[in-house]
Image (cartoon, rainbow, N blue to C red):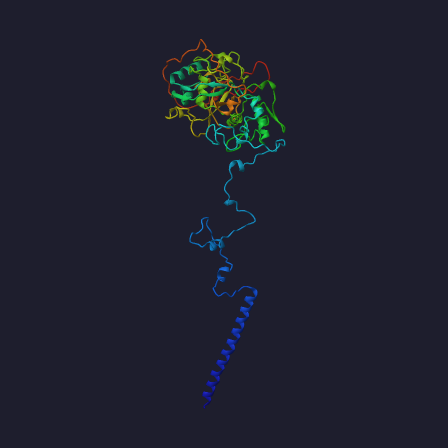
Length: 496
């Protein structure tokens, strides 16, 4: 054999040797890894390959609320994943209702016992933000189980019945022109355009209802504020529908207020004002008070019906202004401030309701719409627009001339306004809880004869009708101080 053949044989034999050694080492390493996996539990020997399903997965499975109908029950149960974190993700939580989310300040309140759960009395409106509605936040001030809270029932005003029917609501341009002429003769600065939201006159039908004979007084409202305290609320947050709203101003916020507040209770600063109308009260504060005694604010149509009486007069007592019948500018002995709610008996309406002209203007339930009278479909128990910015105010005040105290005249104010000449009275359905438990019960109507000097509106040429103006910006207010007696809030400053 040659040397070349011997070298080839040697190289071929060495390759097989190295291959054999590599296989032995490879099998040995694999066996070691397998034994280690079995020992540590990483690997399981199963003949059906089910270990794949048992292995942990780094990719979470998404499970919908409705299970896959094609999945076997065992598989569906096994694949449900519940993730628990230390801090909940608040972005996934629905917004709480206002009554649960609202935190009421109580740092100024004396400690009180946990309020007794309350419920709304029968026949109270359902919670809503529509005019006259109860609303969520107002529920704790509604009548408690079994009737009206006794401390409020004891002071609630007497109700008088108002017969329902069809009457002419609003005014006409001839009557407005005559009212403007009289205003100018008295030294005022009235214009026919100030009455354009009361046009046109139209026939409106309302059902029978009850209305308080007098305006709500300080004494009555103090009782309400102290009742709020028992509910864990106060005048700053105790009123409103879906949000906490101020009820009224106290001395803490307004130096002209007669309401004093301390950690224990509310009271009045001067006893002589107890029977005068509460003022600096918001619409929310008026609405909440009425509901607390099982009543409500009157609609604008109800207010005008009660003021005009069964004879549909322009003023509560007749069609001509009688200065002695109302606390307005022009009265021979002007008070220049609100007076007791049971004064001016001769100025009562045909249904026996007092001070519906002058003394203080009054909140009504309705949202204000400047053109609401011209819209069709609001002739039967109208309740005003469904929404708005301002609420309707009626009746004029001690700070107004007779033009603004006519039973047909309309004003509008923001619901949170607090004014020294603005108060309210309540109304009730004839079969409501507030009527059934009214202090003193409903009284028979006291129809007073019209003043002999009353005159009908005159026929005068029509004037142009544009715009609506706040009468208190017209320079028609008296600024003289009272001749005697305790200091009273001054009338609003007139504009030259």
